[in-house]
Image (cartoon, rainbow, N blue to C red):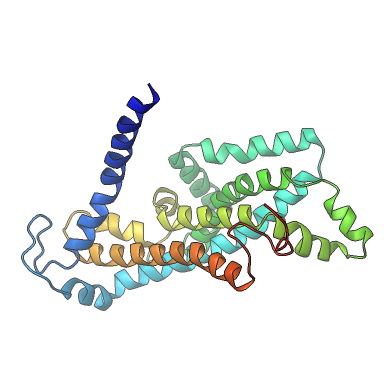
Length: 275
């Protein structure tokens, strides 16, 4: 019975991969199209990449997207990690209440969050623009970081920090040299999710931004009524960047492990141990 299920499972997996990745391949191919057509490839050309670089509005929106995504990722990762560590030392009832509140923005429809943030800024009389977009991105990224870091903290020995301080470490050293290295996988995962959510966001950004401030998703939306193949070019560069980051994230730890003479997944200090 299990053998009969394997071909079906493999077929479904292959179809899912084709469904997700074929449009990306299609986009990359047509970013080199000589004509404006999105259905007929007439010849190889770099004209849309050249037009993309010369389009000041498009490059400015890309710059805004990257800056906001990076700042939101750094700030939300720091705040989310500190919050998760603080929650782990709180009473259980406090943990439960705060985590329920933390899950609410994740479960809440984006349109509701966007309208709420817009009304909040209007009520305070804050002029909408770059800063309001950044604050909004930080706000909705923090819950994802906490959600990624908390399971790693729960897996740690609760007496780990106390043991480090008993051996002479200061509270700061116990945090940075003992706790953080143990949960760095969760922190890295939370940072990746935060960056992706910020880079991809449209609905919240559209409601909290002001005149003259557009990220990439807002710019694409405003251009949706006219076909501009330069979108394919800039999207291809984004895909290339993400691919390089993922390759580096997987290859660099392997290279470091080989330099230290470790096996994949082995920690320093375990060279002579059997895994």
